[in-house]
Amino acid sequence: MQDMVTSEMMEDKNRVGHVMEENEVDVQIRQTKAQLQQANNTRPNWSNGQCVVAMPSCSILNPSFDLSLCRAKLENDGFQIPERDLEAPLKTALDVPSVRRYMVFNSALFHFLMAPVLYLVVWCAVFSTLHIYITVSDYWVLCLSVSLVSIFLTTAIIFVLHYSNKEIDMNLDIRLIQVNERMVKHKLLVAVADWVQSCTGNMQLYFVYWDMSRCLRALTETLEERSFVANDTQNKLKRKLSHLVLVTEETAVDPKVGGSDGKQDSDEQRPLLRHEGMGCSTSSSQKDGAKITTNYSLIPDASLPAQTKAYQLLMTYSAAYVKLLVSERLSGPTHHSQRSRRNHCTNAPLCLCQYIIKKILR
Image (cartoon, rainbow, N blue to C red; front, side, top):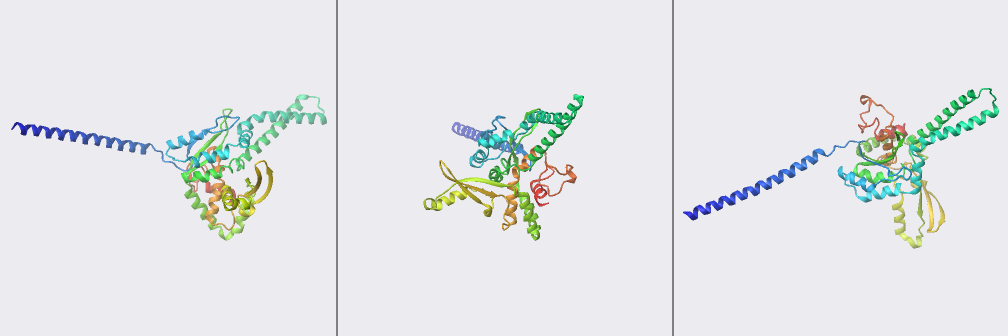
């Protein structure tokens, strides 16, 4: 009898231990599910035009961006981007001394500091000119007239510089085309934008969420609808994009030595957005061998399908559009009810395909 009681007690202890182990496993499973649910709830629901990461420049005089920190921030937001798609193409596009110098001298802060210097130069030039040819008894009248003329001329020059910055930038926006061709696979677009805020420069590298599928479909439909006036459309593209010429330098390959491998390497170095018939090359001698300078036009070829043309136009204007988007310089209907139903961006009056249609096809 005592053995039966002992065995029953042992079985009860085993059942209690087994139940406790099951309870602990259930608790761990519930905690894991709760953590996953919480992570899914806290993960943002991105929409087109929403800024994911804005990385400020490390220096004003030597613009550069911490790309490793950019990739870490993007990973925290759920964007798993390999190094070959993010850091390598961005370094190739922006980490060049000539491009850095251009970013300094073309920055909004430099224009802001140049304004008073320009005013003084214009004032001295106008005063010296009028003082020779016009004789007045009261110098304050001459100084007032010179000041008004100088203010007008300085404002006009600054306005022209500001207006030119709204156009596509060959030295920055075009260089970022190949970067956006890689980033668009991860539903991101990249651009460099800057403006003056509180008398300080604000140059930043922006990563904006963008799902290209709807813009690609809408722009393809627009080009297909205009297929009956294909010549008129191609003439508009040539007239609006004739100034977009990409100049590249490639190492000349001896066909006797390089063979087919050299041809393959040369093709891989060429930009995707190019016009095969527009390439004209001139060779020059350098220390490391002969270099071939080739000019590629960014006008889509007339023989390409409508979807390919649309993709090339979207990539060409991707960085310029993002620059205008983040700096709030896109012009269009600001009221929500006036926006077109085909607008694929809730944060701007125009989406990328509408901007291209307004800029080029109209």
